[in-house]
Length: 85
Image (tube, rainbow, N blue to C red; front, side, top):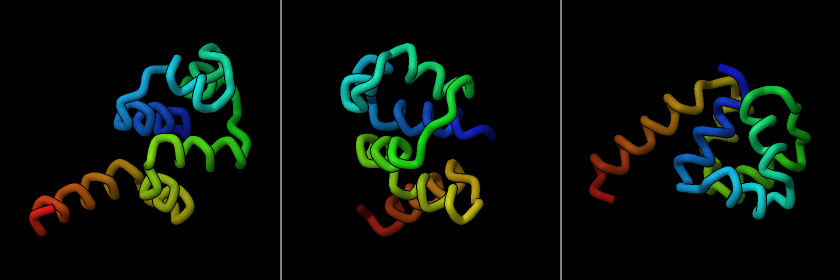
């Protein structure tokens, strides 16, 4: 899966529109779309900011460790449900 797909999943999971994400990232909505569609490469500092704005730290950790972020996120969600959180 491409990084843009993960960016989109992170944004949607945070309940943000492209317009809202653009405001938070100080970018145009067009650039958010390009990032999510793989037509624009994200800079490291922007990726870190994206993670902070979407509160998706597990996605970032999974990407760094070369794991599937969606799988890790689902595992964490399941664990939280089992624990009763």
